[in-house]
Each structure stands twice: as structure tokens, then as C-alpha cells.
Amino acid sequence: MSQAGIEKSAALLLALGEEATAAVFRYLSPLEVSRLGTAMREVEVLPRERVRAILRDYAAEAAEQTGFAADTGRFLDETLKQAFRPELAQAMLQRLGASGVQALEKLAWREPADIAGLLEAQAPQLIAVVASQLPRDVAAAVLELLPGRTRADTLLSLAHSEAPGADILRDLDDWLAGLDAAAPPQGEAAVAGLLGQMSEGSVAAALVQLDQNDAELAARLRVRKLVFEDLARLPEAGRKTFLRNVAARTLLHALKGCDARVLDALTAVMSPTAAQRMRVDLDTLGALPVTAIQAAQEEAGATLRHLAAEGAIQFPEEEAA
Image 1 (cartoon, rainbow, N blue to C red):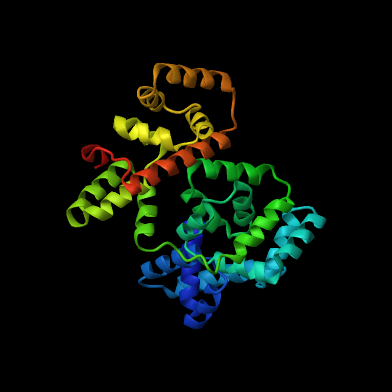
Image 2: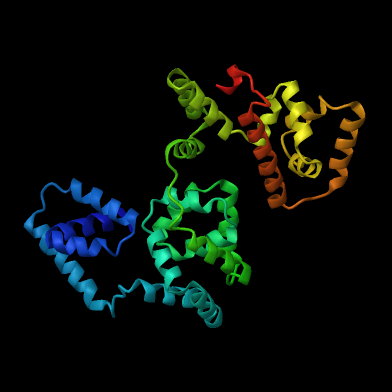
């Protein structure tokens, strides 16, 4: 909805009164409620002529409408039928069932950041199915909060996939079944999630401030944000420990196309023979799917975070800050 449309709708709701506005709000997404509420707060005086003009406009628009579907179950049914071939839409509806529809309805009322947190570890195909059933503004806000590569893969899936396959539908069933048990991140997990959305400079400044109040918390948060590329600034002893704990195949795939500083940092602590073999293996590995490289880098990053959390490796304090 455009800003002009939001302001016009806010004025109409104010004219209709609290009870009617409350009834309307029940059928809006969280973002729509928030935007309308903000606009309503900004309307200090509503002139009589303005109210009349708005009501005339809405009356004219309503006269041209053939109907209004407030049944969210029916809405989902019709949306799926428009999105996919009839037989595939029917199969999906049967798999979702009433509980699946209700779960998707509840999901739409969560904050976009919460939805993104629940989806970010899922396959892009599953995210695409869920996003296609969310209100457009909510889906857009969720996609904006997802990691860049996940967002791109999800959009690609939305653009090219005719319908979700059987495996994705089974994953969707399982994911929806676990929604009620999946609470939004709280405490330290919530802080880590927020830091993940901030710029590097803001994160560094925030962690420096946290050092003064809770150094242990700041240290744990630094561990949470470690990624594969941080190997380049790990001291020699830590790099050797990492090499002893990471699978050779995972490391080889993770190094494919990564920052040359990471490869140089690791080969610097290997024997000349092992370092040469690593470079040859990389040269002869050939092209890999981007998803395979990302998965390997995430697995290697998880190993790095695990070792740091256990204290097996340590980053220089001045660099960690």
C-alpha cells in the first residue's frame, strides 16, 4: 500500500470508530497494522469535509467490487490454485490440512525478524513456499532480513519453481508442526541475532561497550559471530588446532574461491609438502556449486566457533574488539 493509501485508510478508520477499526485490524498483517497505527497517531485534526471526501471515495470503490473474502482458509485455497497447477495445488492443500493453514495464519502475525530467524536455516525451496503464503509486505520484510545468498536463492526458487516437490512438502509439514514449540530468540540469542544485522563498525563499538559491563558476555558474542574467513587473523597455534579438527574434504570445499588470505594463513602452518598438495588439490578440484561451497564454509565456521567456545583457540583481544 502506498503512503497516500495508508494515510487515507487511517483517516477512514478514525472516522469509523474503535469497534469497526478493531474488526478491520483482525484481517491485516502486523506490518499493515503498524503502518496504519502510525499514520493514525499522526492525524491530529480530521476536517469534516475530509471525512466526507474519503467516505465518498470508498463508497465508489466498494460499488465496483464483486466481493470480499475474509475467510483466510479460503484465501489460502484460492492462492494456491492460482499459483500452481490444479492437481498440485490440491495435493499441497491436502498435505497442509487445517492445522497447516492455521500455522501459516499464526506465522503471518509474528514479527518479520522472528519469521526470518525461524526460516534462515531452511532450504530456499521451503522458504519460497512459506513466503508465497505470507502477506506480500510481511514476505518482503522477511526476505530483506535473510542472509543475502539465502534471499537470492529463495527469489530464484520463487521465480522458476512450478510447485514444491514431495520432499519439500514433507519438510514443510515438519517445519509447520514445530512452529508452536519454536519460541522467538530471547536473551543472548536475540542479541547475537541483532548483531548479525548490524554493520561491522557498529558491532565492534557495541562489543567494546559490553566489555566494560560484562566481558564474558562480550566474549561469547564474539564467538557467535566468528565465520570461516576469521581464520586469517587466528594466531599460528590456533590455525594448527583448527587443521587438526576440521575434515579435509570440508576444508577443501570451503577454501574454493575464498579470500586468498585464508588459504595463505593455513598453508603457512603446514609442512611444505602438505601446503603444495593443498594448492594442487584446489587447482584440480574443478567448479563446485555455490551452495556446496557455502555449506562447507558454514561447517568449517561451526568448527571454528566450537573450538573458540571451548577455549581451544583464542583470537588476539585487540583484533577481537
